[in-house]
Image (cartoon, rainbow, N blue to C red; front, side, top):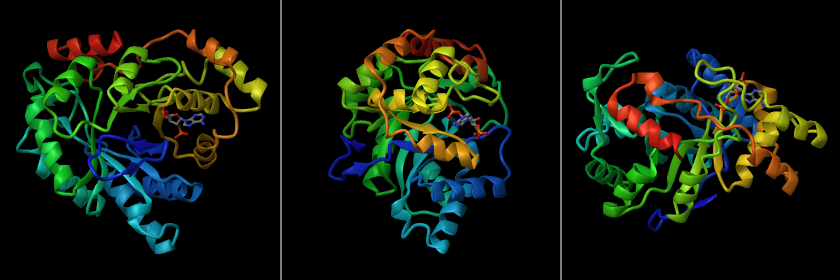
Length: 316
Ligand code: A2P
């Protein structure tokens, strides 16, 4: 997908990215081997974050892929990483992107994203966290620092994640460089129509995270991969439930990051471009029960700021 609003640079992002967050955290060798396997399978977009602890693994895998001649240059890979909430302060953004670049061993990232829509007052080691540490994001000044990352060539594109319509309005009212993407939880079981359409109307591309409902993780469940409706469509088409779900996301004009460290499943997840969903299938999927998987309150505690953001995202 070609991303708009990026200044002079034309930024093309592969529609399917490989997620690198795992719980419990994969050991570095396992993660590096899985990422190398994904490069062999054809993935050219990798999604990481300072807080995932996988930036070093991704950097090591890219270096190894170069040594092995699997890719010709670092430019062959689209890297997304994210500004952690503890560094969501105008003076901490540049040091934070520099730390991520060091972890990755690269000179620039393709996309730098504000990870969470609020600030955490200091570096914390575990969740839940104290109420006083959760602070509102000063959107204007943090975004100016993000713009500086792009101006300095440290990030080719800049974006946000988990931003509500209200926060996007505020951001757009002062931004010199509008965000290229808003990365949001989205799947057939959490279709997020209102926020998605709002982003699309503002030229902000939506990337879905947890498009398979984060199956087999601590925070996810099987409401996507265990759906009878999706399973029925999959059987009729000779595809897997995962492929139908990812295809559905794609047909909404949305790109996605999905994680699999399993060779067969990572290949399967890329193979969604040789079929279409029919009107009837799309209609059936539009009627699936809806529920947001992850709430911030469940991760960091039921604090007022967090509850308000959760409520806005849940109403989207
Ligand atoms: P695994 O790494 O063992 O394949 P999401 O992308 O929604 O966050 O979901 C990721 C989870 O879904 C991972 O736990 C991953 O496990 C699992 N997964 C990824 N692809 C598939 C697939 N094609 N079929 C079944 N499970 C999958």
